[in-house]
Image (cartoon, rainbow, N blue to C red; front, side, top):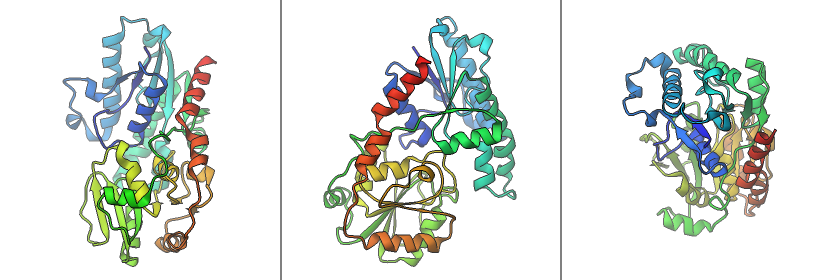
Length: 345
């Protein structure tokens, strides 16, 4: 039985790493997922804030080795998300370790954070130290995009193999817009823009609010966690929406705006495009690489640039079928084949 060491598995509103873990389990159905949630007496809130995630990673590794050391690990593969392999010792493990990079902490800090922010130093130096150590411990390194691969090489001097994330194209697929709106109790006669992500500046929520302030006739459907109350009446906030219901939200929208300041990959634009909802995105993560027809990729974070792009897409009558392109490039089948080929070598 293969194993995955990761942060958490409990949240119904999963971030990219949690979603990825679910897809990895489709490749390896018997995959054992070991996380902080597996440890009965571990309380994340009680850990020292500056090193909370490295402490969690160490606790998960120790728990895994203690609980499963009597098994034949030599016949297994141990997957680790991000820094969650830093505390694994190869002599103790005696198994193939595959480290999965969903981004690069050092690059994220330099790109999306100001040096006046105390968190910059925690992410740029402390977390990146443990991330590099985790990557160095691995026999095989996987990056979720060429962008992540380049940053891991640039900052840590380590090579990795690119395997694009998968999405469930049986779930994320085109469907009737009016039916989706009726299901979600949304107006049929409004232009609707969707934003999916955390309500902070890193994900570009400030740009969404700037657009809402300017474009008062447009309804901004924001699927976010945690829930926030916006001062703008044309922003509707939905929180704790499970991933398997997001397809209805994408289908109900005319355009998806994804102004994230940093992504290793970025599921949101891919899921939206799979539903034939065009995307306006910042030039980061996977959108830096594919730039599909019918969507607009923007350099920088000037709200007026996003507003111009939004005006352009909202007046378009025709729908460009992006779903086939997404299905061909990011299917679960392709994801499975890539991982199986990786482990054959």
